[in-house]
Image (tube, rainbow, N blue to C red):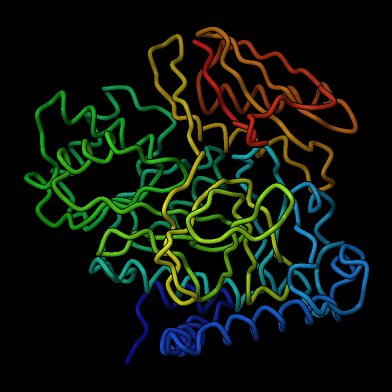
Length: 437
């Protein structure tokens, strides 16, 4: 049987998707009563691999062998803010890895890597979970509410990727009514199977539909489901989406450096990915908490050999449900991950995650900028507070301001404030964007 375009694209780029899907199927077939042993074996194997092959992790651990899992120190994002080449395992040169940058949504950006097999497993996991709702990446047309690079090469590259992966992108930098009106026309004209994208952007579209008294399913009958990601989905917003879209709303929780972490299953449970990840809930002293108690979400990537993510504190707070099992953990509650919407002088509304694309211009592989937050203090005025070893240069500031004018609008005032520490919430989490209006 011939591979379809999406699978072919992965294969051409060196991601062994067929092998990964077979491996995932084998993991899924492990019985519940054997699953604890599978996790223990996988955890031990990935730790041993990095202790033997990763100089960065050897120094981080400070010993050559680990006997007790709970002795392994928790890895913070700041631990990874050093050049990527210093963090890679032996045997993983640039052509054997997938490299990307974290969004900095927690205020702690860094560059990361996965080996290509681990990244193929990420795609296999995505394909499996989206399949719960009848979505086939090779054939289902996605209405994608995400940002897009606005430089010529980056824009064309992303559009080509959209073509290969059967996606039609709705850029979210401008969500004024005139733009949303065009979005609506596209839903009249195209046979979308599903919606996927940032929560705040999709909620703004649903509010527009409510004002227009339109239910999306009635004008786009192919529509099956809507998946929201990257930001908190509140109950009122979920009800709004269900009403205005007329399809199930699925809550997705993931991290680019890891995988899908949790995905709402058809029984409306927020099912944790226990196939490629191991998720723990820890207290402030790094003690493992029992199911039902609130704590820090700490995650181990079980198959990423290129770069260690072992007991990695993702920066979120959550609760695993009391009915969780090793094979089927259920995320009862996720606390945090909210983003405000910026309202600009022109009337344009942009979700806080717009700043994800802007802040990429200040993220450097040398890890100079350690943390940053952005505050809107007036309708035309923003502050960027950042922690770094060296002040941003005038050239860097000009680059950021040019990006701001490109992604948002010209004439905005930005003040750059270098600080030793940033103010954090009582849970220790930074909110990347905050509107003070």
